[in-house]
Length: 85
Length: 193
Image 1 (spheres, chains in turn cyan, yellow):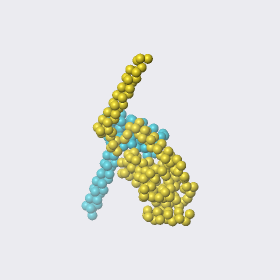
Image 2 (cartoon, helix red, strand yellow):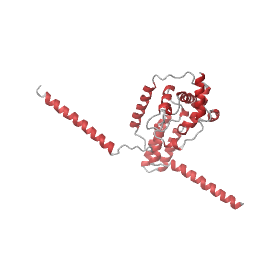
Image 3 (cartoon, rainbow over the protein chains, first blue to last red):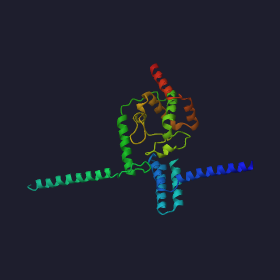
Image 4 (tube, chains in turn green, yellow):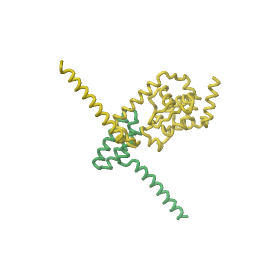
């Protein structure tokens, strides 16, 4: 019984890990992800949220150019938050 | 004065040369595959603005003169439109309580999330739903649906931004279950009027 529970927990963990990795992949600081965010921003109505998202993406791209991927991700997350407001 | 014909000849030559050069550049860009049609690489903001403005003006001009029915607030229209919307539109335009779908993420230009509202008037919305929009993924629903059904969708879209996820689900649940049912119901209603 314990063995079965252990295997089930392992399988759940693996599945969860895979989902998180998938999300991570989508939000990674890459050219493709940046293009996708720009496409989202273009479709937004003009306003504060759009301006914020554009500024955050500019900063994300600056950070990407400087190879600071963590900072790039932080700005992309902020842009995403503005897009989904 | 005697120089004028020569000046004109030079001017003509310069104009023809400029036009030929522009044509050559255009042809090189066209046949050289310079324009990237990939949907995962967005247009430049300038080109996006140009296309968006062309689209907005095209819709505005063509929607002029469309007579908007005065019963768009009729609950029967809204319920019928909810069913149509859930079936035909929600995969791309999403709905209250719905997460972004793979198709909504992949379309370019992005389909507007209509739960956030739309700046289009009912007449323009009707025109777009009926005729679709080239190179956007928006189909021409008028090829397969009669106008009254499309006005039901317009009626629902006016209500959509005010709906909570529960209200949206309830409307979809009580909507006619199949396309055929809606079409038959709609046609019978029109015959009644």
